[in-house]
Image 1 (cartoon, rainbow, N blue to C red):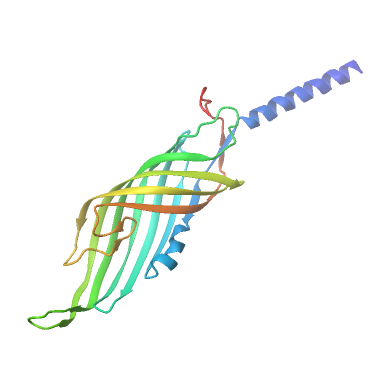
Image 2 (cartoon, rainbow, N blue to C red; image 1 turned 60 degrees about the horizontal axis):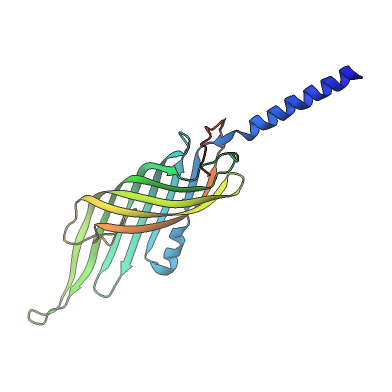
Length: 229
């Protein structure tokens, strides 16, 4: 009887240690996000459609390399011109989580800051351009032929993300974009640069609201950071 009790207590002790070890583990894996903020364009800017997806991964504790890929199409019909533009963009960089854990290591909420390098390759053209003139008369039928453009910028990023269900996340972020190079513009500024914003500005602010899914591929034991919550 004593031997049976001793074996039982030893087994319970081993199980308790195993549970404690599992409680100290975190899950990591690629997280795929889709930007839902583009749906608001159906109301605020119906001539513009944007599709953006992102992938990030906790490469090191609290450090998340991330890449954004997107496509934009613009069609604007006005009395004095018809404008079309389409192209892709990519942003690459990393986010740093400012919310750290001590005992609850299985909490994955984030408040983060980060940076991106952005690049966009797109084209634009304008047709049926009409220019009123009092002296020479009105001009109509002008056009700016389709031509490619390239834009480079850097972005400062801040945002928050919460785990609403196991491996499902929702969150928002703000991008402050600073353009430092553009080539290919012929006679007019782009209406909107994919991934950057208004083409006539060198500094823009953009937002996104993303739904994310993490593919859990690895468990690891994090380093605790005393004094941080």
